[in-house]
Image 1 (cartoon, helix red, strand yellow):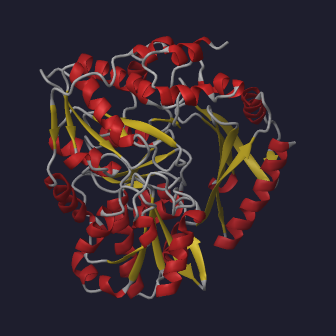
Image 2 (image 1 turned 180 degrees about the vertical axis):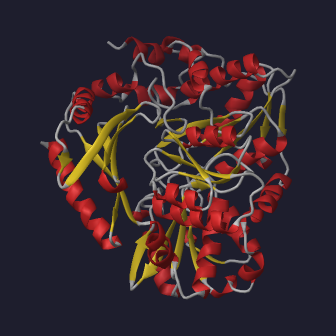
Length: 544
């Protein structure tokens, strides 16, 4: 019998209701949920399914994380009473875990600051609050755009970015798995806690409005267009419409997706990277004759935009939106120091061409905004941030915080949409008729390959080694210039002719890996056709 399971089942810290839940687990579930393995940080904090077990998130495993972070803060922050901000989204257990976090921080002599009435709060405002109030970091209870049965946590450093280099030391303080159930927990007292006033949100709104670049011209045109907004029943549901209306945009929210609930009962897909997330938004936009939809995820760090053209809705991906924002910002913003762009290694390289044209630098990082935030902080010492973004949607377009920010990104993309509508152009026209003719007709796509094998980790390792050792001079019709392993980005790069590439990343937690394609053609259609040809050749190689 599983010893960890028996330990939990027999513990006097388990309630009668929890014991019933444990009793109903199958042997397979027990083996999966009660492993002698510590939780680990991924590309954006720690995320897992909610429920009992050492591999799930619950009051005991959350406690393990909070104790470790508190130990890290006490050993690395040298003020007499460190201060940590705590925020949360609207998922199951989120609000309750902010109180647990505060109790555990207090037990180490750390002051806990919560938002007004412990309200749910968007991720960018948490990062902003760290920056504005000069605290020593933050705890954000959220699983971002994950399925409704998941939850998670993001930890922030004193520079308002997600922890990155700090992760190995924080994980070092995770207790042994067998000790999780016995850590001091909810019985701890609250001894040093403060609630912020709503003024912090007003201050964020005031600073975030400064992202708008052409205020006079925008003021004369912004009321002309109905803008449909889908907040996916999350933390932005009340605040984002209010913010965008303050700027002057004519916001039309999808009402059912403004209803904040933990079960996301009116949301088919909470990730605006996926077109299914926009089903209700598109229907409402068609009803009121709107040409644009904005979608954000439940913790409000990600933003996506969709445009209706020739009777069809087109969802722009992260590379397209990031390309537009990069071009517009570098073309319109005044910079005190040399501007710079931060992007992941698997993000489109057309931004390098745009940046070179405007005299800006581009810095690349590994996937995940913890890496981008770290690079933004590093390069801001001598340069001025233009934008940081990834191919998987979401961008940081100002220096008031240091995480993806759907509020400022929405404001800026709506400014661009409004001003180009005056020229009888939409965002797709901006790409196809202004940006691509000058910098190249670019097509990008990421494709996931799923491995259906119980021994999938070994299969994945074999696949990536096969791709590393590929000897042929071409893949399909494409000459291969060189193949390299990018250790910093943890991806395999195939550099092809004409500035094209394919890059591969292996998942450490799921039976799949991704292929990222970036190609150029004589037109958008030509670039797309080239992608299809290359995808067929790569798929045959991987699946063969």
